[in-house]
Amino acid sequence: MRPKEFNRNNVLEKCLTLFWKEGYNGTGIQEIVDRTNVNRYSLYEEFGNKEGILLASLELYKKRHIDWKLLSQPISIEQRLFQFYMSFFNPSKNNNHPIGCYISSMAMELRETHEMQAFFNTYLDFLKDRFEQLLKEKLTLSIDTLKITPQQLTTFYCTSMGMYVIFSHKEAEKYIKNNLKLITKCLNK
Image (cartoon, rainbow, N blue to C red; front, side):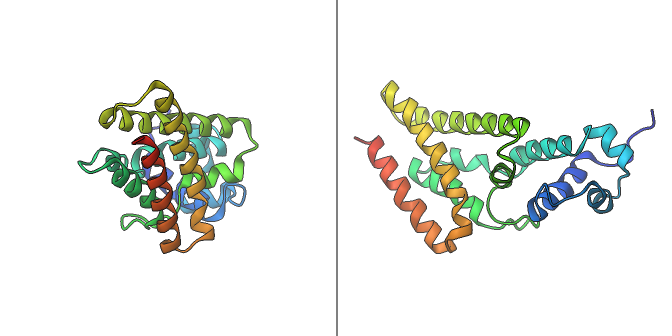
C-alpha cells in the first residue's frame, strides 16, 4: 500500500465547506476530487464512500469548530449559554464557513437517512451531556430538573440553529437572550 499523499484534516475541511455551501446531495464526488486535489481511489481508500467523507467531516467539525470552551468560562451560566448559542451566528475569521451549524445544516438535509440520524442523535446526546455537566457544576438542582433542563437546552439549540435563516443577527440575539432568561429563571425557582 502506498503512503497517503494528503492531509486528512485538510481534505475534510474542504469537503466540510463544500457540503455546507452546496449541500451534501448537491455535491458530486468529482467536485470533491476537484476541490481537494485527491483522486477518487485515495478518497475511497481513506473514507469508504461519500457518506464516509461526510461522517468524518461532521466529527472534525464537532471537535474543531464548536467552541466548547464557551461553556466553561468564569461567568454566569446564562452568559455562557448565550455566548455558546451566539457563536454559531458569528462567521469565523479562521475559515470561510457560513453562519449556523454545519451539523444542523446536514441534519436538515439528511434527516431521513438511518446513518445520519444515528450520528445526529449521538451528537444531540453529547450536547445534552455537556449542558448537564454545566448545570451540575454551578447549581444544586433536583434530579427531575437536571433531567429536563439539559433536554430543553438541547431542544432550544435545535430551534435556534434555524433562526439564522429567518431572523437578522439582532433579532436572533434578542430571541436567544429572552429564551435563555426564561430557562435560567426557571432554574432559579
